[in-house]
Structure formats: C-alpha cells, structure tokens
Length: 303
Image (cartoon, rainbow, N blue to C red; front, side, top):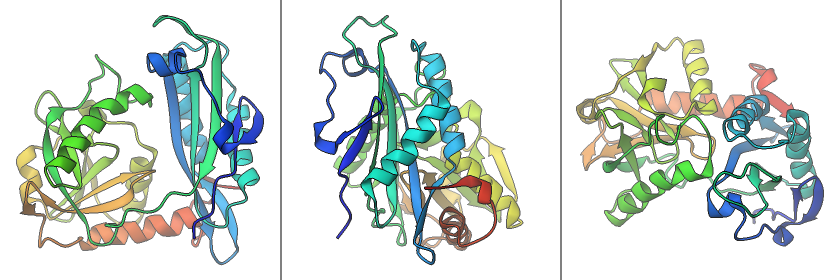
C-alpha cells in the first residue's frame, strides 16, 4: 500500500493536507494566475534514503515563471528550497514522492492584479504509468500547441496546461493513451505534458526550443545521459510523417519519467515494441535519479 500525504506546507506553515484552502475567486484560481513545478524525490532502496532530483533547476524555472507573471514580493529561492525539503520530511514517505510547489495570487482582484502572492508545497505518492514497459499508443492531435506569442510554453503556468488537457481528453475519447501536438507551422512540438524524443538510424532527435516546447528539466537530463552513452542527439524539426517511419519514440518529463511510444495513429513504431535505445536510456535515467550510480551526484539533493 502506498504511503499517504498527511501534511502540506502553505505560506510557510505545516497544516493537514486536506486543510489547505484558497478562495475560489482568488486571481490564481479565477484567472489562472499560478505557476508551479512538479518535482520528484526518489528512494535509493539500498540506503533507504530519499533525494530530490534536480531541485535547483526546477527552482530556477519557478523563479523565471514568477518574474514573467510579475508577482509582487514572490518567495525567495531559498525559501522554496526549504519548503520542498520540508514537504517531504513532514510526510515521512517510505517510497518515492511526487512534489508540487505552486505560487499563486491568493487575493481577490482583476486580471491585472499581481498580488498578494501565496504559495503551497506538498509531497504525495504518485504511481508510475502502467505502460512504462509495454509502451503507449498516441495520435497526432488536431489541436495545436500554444505559442510564445500567445501563452509562452517555457513558463510553467497552470493555464498553459488547458491546451494539453483538451488534446488528452480527445485522445482518450478516441481510444489512445496520449496525444502529440504540432506547432502552428505543422511541425511536431511535444505531448500533452511531456517532451518527445525520436530515434532514426541510431540518432536521437528532439524538437528544439523554437518548436514551442517546455524547456524541460527531464529533456535536458536525457540529452546529457545520451551523450554519456555515446548517442548522437540533434535538436531540430520533426515532421509528422517522420513519426510513422521512426525506429523508436518516447516521452519524457518529471511526471511521465521516460515512457516508450509503440504506435502513432494506429501505425506501429518500429516493430511495435519498446526500442532498445529507449529502454537503455530508461535504465540510465532510473540509475541516476535513484543514485545507484555515482554519476551526477550534484543532481540529487538529500532529504
């Protein structure tokens, strides 16, 4: 049985997880004035110790989001770092934890309001995707990805996820596990909440920043790990038709971790099974997040 979240840190105070409250007409809720980070803490089963993965990189992106949203008196990076570690400690998990840190305008106001700012940080269990080993079926959505001139994708704002949610709901209704979104120029961008990698002729290819992607911490991790495993990585453009002739495809993200894609629009990817390079990188990712390798100790913050 999974452990249970008992407490949440809200505006610096530990309270019962179910006691957290924000007014339903707050600007954060009514107008989407909220930025957040999803972060994971992984258990090293040999030592019984938890470590938060790439905490600093997540906090840098949170800072960028608060700056862009023009929040008044936002919490400091040091305060948010402390909150993440506190949220894990007070819940005393005996296994992996998913951490959500959220900063929002908690007062009532208009669309132009920039304060007062509140925040919350919680740690909770999150099951891994059941198709982590078998692979996902996806389709290319008719909905397009948001653009930097509309709702900047590199800002991790809750409102940005509405577009992905629409695409996901349609994918589920049509019998798929997930969806891929294209840019308005008709090039592949990313999934509904994860970045994409393609393998062709032994080379990894991932859409570049110009393709309206989130500047993903996990994507950056995969690029580093691929290079360390002597795999060539290209950041550029992926056409829709390339998906149908790709050797391998996979999603990556903090929530999704690394998930193979085995069919697109009912066409098999490669032989229709998770690819060798995908599973090799999934294993490398597992090792580095859990600390069963000495590599990249700087990415793991002990709890």
